[in-house]
Length: 153
Image (tube, rainbow, N blue to C red; front, side, top):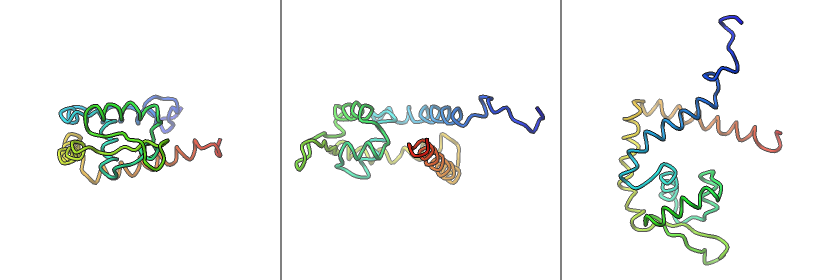
C-alpha cells in the first residue's frame, strides 16, 4: 500500500465512528449546562420542539424528533413528572395523545435561551463553523435516510 492509499477498515477513517464520538462528546458538553434546568439532552430536544409548537400530538412530536414511541414515551413521562408538560387525550380523537407545555415548561424557555451561547463558547467554534457543520450533518442524515429506505435495498 502506498502512502496515498488509505486503509478503508481503519477505525479513524470510519464516518460512523467519528459521528458516534462527536455525538457523545457534544452531549457531554450539554450535560452540565442542562442539569441545573432539570433536563437531560433528549428531554431538551423534546422541549425545543414544544417551544416551537405546543400542543402537538405524540405522533407529530415523534416524527419531528425522529424517535420511536417506545423511546419518546418515557421522556414524556419524566417531563410530565417534572411539571414541564401535560399529556392529554385529544378531544376530537381519543386515540391521539396531545402534549402541551405547562406554565413552568413555557417559563423554562426564557432560561434555556442562555444555553446555545454557552454551548458555542464551550465548543470554541464560531457560529459560522457550527452552521457549516450542521448543514453537512443534515446532508449526511438525508443521504443515510435515502440509502436506508426500502426502495434502495
